[in-house]
Amino acid sequence: MARLIDIDELADYLKLKKQTIYNWLNKGKISGIKLGGVWRFDRKDVDTWIKSRKRISQVGEK
Image 1 (cartoon, rainbow, N blue to C red):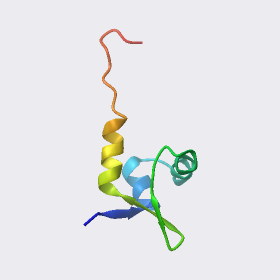
Image 2 (cartoon, rainbow, N blue to C red):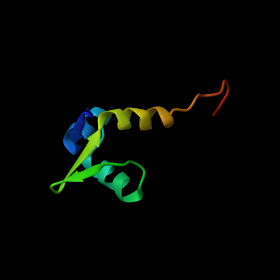
Image 3 (cartoon, one colour):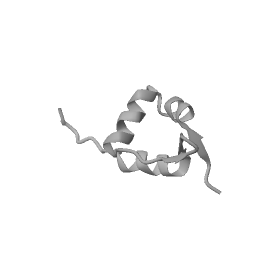
């Protein structure tokens, strides 16, 4: 079963302000599920999204 977290938990997990997450939702940068007027996020999907954003730095890159 999916582990759903609310926006407060997600903000704490990502060390971001809730407003940043709301902005990302509006821009389609992150996905969530709205249940009963409350945004919920699948922790597994969030972790996958984080891994997809990972960049490998190049030596000498500025």
